Image 1: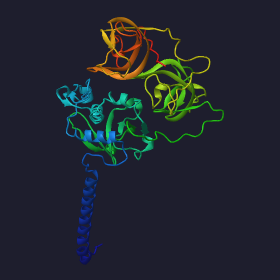
Image 2 (image 1 turned 135 degrees about the vertical axis):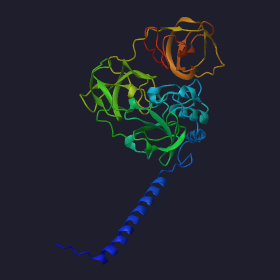
Image 3 (image 1 turned 120 degrees about the vertical axis):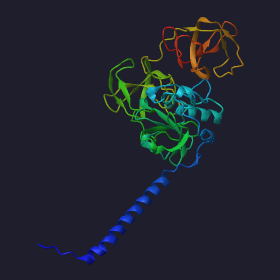
Image 4 (image 1 turned 180 degrees about the vertical axis):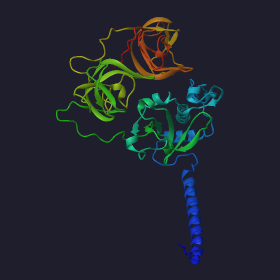
Length: 411
């Protein structure tokens, strides 16, 4: 069978096909041009309003670091600022011990130090995140709408796997020290797919929605927990009985028990609560409280959670806790006295102390401590304070006696 071909139709269709193809190419070009424009990073700066003056100053300090080389471990010396990093091929940093620069947590530490004149956010990403200095705390579920310039944004699927920090600029943009071989730069917050949450160091803000009124009968103290936390049948148990979800929860009272720790953060207080999963009246570690520091157990208003009836407070004091100091050390009238105002000397050797408080940082190289111990020095008046930095047996921000017992807080 012979097929007839309509030559007029073929003549008309060919230009139409070319026109359609041209239109498609133009559309694609417009699309990619628009996409490129949407991804163009703005100049580094404060991109929205509402932040505290210290936070906006920190943004400007961070923007002044644009172009600084990334160095794995850089910025973690005794004082904030660029340092040579660590050569670590397992972390993609085979040459960083030869690069003077900043890693992500070193960059935000240095920026805030330049802004406020104090080392307010020392440590790595995982130890920065639970800092008691935070005045507000936000999570992935809160979205990015509450964020203000100067907020520190953290990335990781859980609190224990946080691996990166940047500083928020506003309008969805961050300034960051990104990776080995890179430089401090502006990037979109959305360029990281595992945003975990943010902390605010200055200003104000709600960390969570206002909770519902406590159940009838009272006795509840409202606290914020920064992660889903395991609960246990007692403060010394090691087998979990359920889970208390991240957010605002109530607790009844506290007891002293097994230490829970990560990096330089730790807590011995345990809080009685009714978990989201598991039987009621279980125990959760105060380590998971968002607003406070080591061995502190307070509610969201700053009220100390009371001891549980029938005991359960700190171990009965012996009056003195024996510690070894590795040098003759200066003592001070308070835990916040300046380094030039020593009131006496505690000699190197085995000495006794009474209790501890959080105060001025004493540091050298990568070693530091904020705990201060009340003692009677060898030279000078009684009841003075010595930094736990000088304890022989322990590490950063640890204050234990020679038997490993955590020295109790002073009240």
